[in-house]
Image (cartoon, rainbow, N blue to C red; front, side):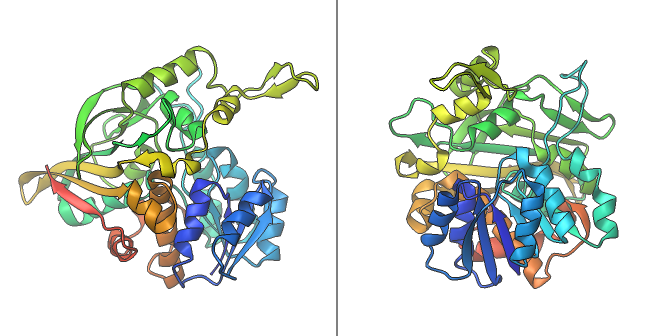
Length: 404
C-alpha cells in the first residue's frame, strides 16, 4: 500500500507517528500547503518510507498529479472539511481509494433551518456513490474517532449486543484542562465552530432526518474512567447521517460535552459574526485585505497540536445504545478513553488529535490486509466491527463497555 496523506497538522502528524510503528504500507507521502510542516513531520520519524511534499488541498489537478507521480493507491484526507470535495474527486480521478475523518459540508435549510435539513453532511459525497461503485472503487468516509470509531461501536452493538435498538446516541466528553489559557480548544476551532453552530441533526425512524436549535436537549452524562458527569448538548455531526444508512435504530443523536463557558463563547462569536466564513474587507499596512472572520479567530487561538505539554486529563469518545436483547431491556455505553499524559509520553501527540488519528490508521491496515473491502461511498458501519476493535486493542489502546 502506498498512501498520500494530505494535511500535516496535529492529526496528520499523529497519523505519521502511529503508522511508523506498523509494517502494512510501503510508502506514505506527507503533503501540506506549508512544506515546513510536512518536512518536520517526516524528519521526526527517521523512516525512509515517508516523503514530504507541498500541495494545495484545494487544487484538484495538483493532488491528482501527486497521487500519480508517487503511485499512491490511497488518499487519506487529514485536512479540515472545506477540502473534502476536491480531495474526494482527486482520488476518484486518479483511481485511488479515499479515506476522510469528516465529510462534505452541510448548508442549512434557507427557510426553516431549525426544523428541516438543507444540504446534509456528506450529501455531496453520497451523490457520487454510484460512480464509485460502478468503478469498483472505495471511498471510506467519516473514519476518524467521531465519526469513525463511534460508528464502529454502533455496528458492533447491532451485530453482537442487541436484537432491537431503540436509540443510538454518540456521547463525547472530557475533563481536559490547558495551563495558561482561559479558552483553548483541544481541536480545530474552525471545525468546532462548524459543528456547534450549525443546526444539529436528529434522526427518527418515523420522520427521517430533521434539525433543532443549536445546543438543544441538554443532559448530564456520566463518562467513565474518572471523567465523571459532563453536560452534553445536540451538535451537528456525521454519525447521525451515517448510522441510519446501515444500522436499524429508531432514533440517532450526537451530543457533545461542551460545558457552559464554551457554549457561551461560541454564542458570542456567532452574535458578533465571527463564525462567518464569508470574507470581509479590513485595513492593513499594505492596503485593504479580504479575510474570513472564522480564520481570524483560528489565527488568534493557539494551535491545538501545540498544547499537549500544557494539557491534563482524559478525553472519551463513545456510543450509548438502548434496546432489547433476548426480550429484556438493555443499555450499554461502548467507549474509548485516551489519557493525555499517556499519548504525550508514547507519541508526543495530545490526546484529542491522537485519538482522532489512530482510527484511520487502523482502517488503512484492515484495507491493506483485506479484512475490510468494498466499493462505493461507505461509512464505517458498512464493515464488520470485530476486526477493527481487535486491531485497535492490538495498537495498545483498548476500548471498553459499560452496562448502564
